[in-house]
Image (cartoon, rainbow, N blue to C red; front, top):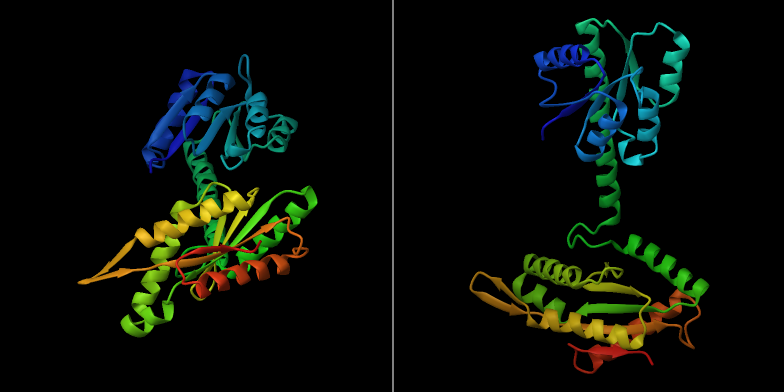
Length: 305
């Protein structure tokens, strides 16, 4: 990915000198230029920029106003701004730092100092982005089942608890579906655990691909999955559950010269319900409905009335 710097200064000569110094060290691939703060901010809005060098004193929109506009847009929080100023007034420099500038350089500048300061702040930006990505990845791993890539049991139950509380508070509808892969033990015993894992993964992907925008699916445990459907009544939940059942039934797993067909059983419970006062009640009724689905021949959807 190419790196870009934005140089904002009303002096053509200063922009030329800054550009020449930075081009020589090869730190950036793309150089954007603007003669005032408003043109500079337009570039920032429309182009990916990694670092900004901005003059303080400019006609129209000056450097302080540019910092103010940038500060109002959170997506630019991680873009460092180094102020260029010909002023020796310490208060002016302190004001720039207080308004969000990362650093300042006094004009006329020394090329070596300019490059060194830019290099430091660009490196800090890169390290911060790497840290954020690492944190995001750690959070994702802590919430994700390693095999199926769905939400794991712990995180799914957190979401289930939150949605149940919300449904109670706002007297809204909520559907919960327990899903079980039919005869899963037979697949493991007949074809081995690698095939069993493959079946778990493929069913999980079908569930995820069929998912509506606000629905949540997670691995409940073993060969069981949980499906959470906020703002969904009994009629709607049965339509969605049947869609899942049919999608899995229509899927054929090809493994070498084997063609394996998999089916699922589904148990549905919805809130509000006369027998549901707690989240445990909701889970128990869905589990009871799943038991009925398996008892009645599997590959079907049952509901707790």
